[in-house]
Length: 564
Ligand SMILES: Cc1cc2nc3c(=O)[nH]c(=O)nc-3n(C[C@H](O)[C@H](O)[C@H](O)COP(=O)(O)OP(=O)(O)OC[C@H]3O[C@@H](n4cnc5c(N)ncnc54)[C@H](O)[C@@H]3O)c2cc1C
Picture 1 (cartoon, protein in one colour):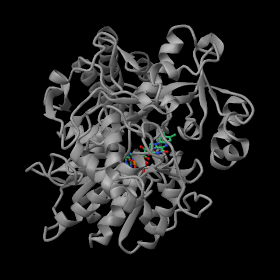
Picture 2 (cartoon, helix red, strand yellow):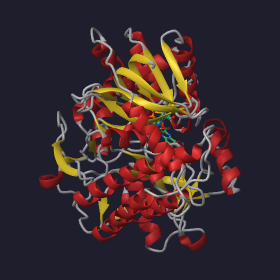
Picture 3 (cartoon, helix red, strand yellow):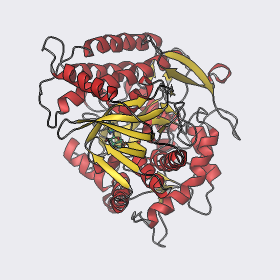
Picture 4 (cartoon, protein in one colour):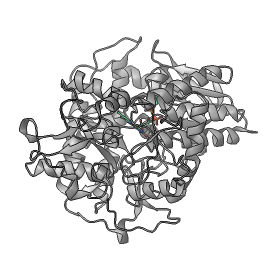
């Protein structure tokens, strides 16, 4: 039975950064991922990472932009830490080998991004996530004596001892089907977001909210779950992302009248207002009949106004995406886009060191809610969040492991999870297919828990999610084998997604105001008197989650009206 000071579940940017930090602090580390680490979803990140590197910039300006972007729901102590530590973290990445773009003077080039008052997004063309992830993975390989890698292992549950302390996890070796207990003094969840609750989404198939649901199931509160980000520029047909870097480079948004309509909604920042604002503006244009494309369901993104040479150099991936997935050469003609689900601001509630309410359990990256993004994340702040709070979690978990005995864990959790998997594999084909239920969930969430929401739609979504939860209990799969049985993992992931979706819907019903990504057409105003607070959700014994509130931490920026 493997035993480590720190078990890290997830090997995207948050997990790998946590592993390196914990190992540097002297801990024995296990790094686990259900896919090969460099196939983690972080590899898809495109546009860049924010840091106030330019001497004329200031981390306080970055922090204020982030607070404003969050619609004042972000916790300002955490935001200050993230922004102050950002330049050091980006320079560290540069020193270990990330080939950030440089300007003609040889300094790091910084591109404009949404909601930012200064050019502060460092980037590697439009493959920033890939560049970062591969460089960190090279470091992980160098640390092979300190970090044990468990690649293609799928965690099925967290293990708590009788005192309620987290002491490990049960996992399945995807290649063989073998179940194993992993004992650990500390567990760090770095298992990413839950975008697959929606269809379409920009998120990879692996983003199924596993860690959020696993933490929720053992009693850790979730926070800000109603805050789901729709990105303004996703391909209409597939939901694929066209990076905000395109607008950062100067691309325009046009309606059916050929009008740059952002002038009406955000006259100062135009296309570079924050994502919630731009997505709502696009959806309003579409809803009011000024959309373009078949049935008027889209908006044009015009990249032709960016010099072609620059597009081919700094946006080369989206040139390929345009050609391969929409048949459009973006250097020559506008491309049809619309808002699409992209990111969840909510997640497992943590403090500024990644600690959850459960001793021994940490969370970092998109699985976590610190909360640095509050009601709306600024573009290029997520990669930063994964690295800063991944590192802090690794350091704190390693410190906690010092002078602590290795816990002892019995075989009961592994036996229970093995039985759970055997039951799924053995199901008769009488219920619905797992994939059908997932499809219905995604379509419903995208219809009623999207850019614009109201009580009736949200209540309908809740009823659908509750019914799908029932149906999931008997949902069947086809693969009855043990080797690479992705089918059975898909059934387990469906349960995780349904838990995440229910928490999202409950929180969205609860918040009777409009703030950040949550726009309630029946409560169109922000109401600081009542709702300047986080909504926390935790499980109780009856399968009906408890809802409670926690205060927003305000340090130096009092809430004011948000204008771009
Ligand atoms: C298309 C796209 C472009 C983006 N561009 C940017 C950008 O330019 N800048 C920016 O700041 N942000 C960007 N983002 C957001 C950002 O990429 C993500 O929020 C961030 O990379 C998440 O990193 P993470 O480490 O938290 O999780 P991930 O990278 O998603 O990693 C999760 C890890 O957990 C593992 N895992 C999950 N469940 C289990 C389980 N049950 N058992 C074992 N392992 C498990 C996975 O295998 C994986 O290793 C973008 C997002 C998308 C979708």
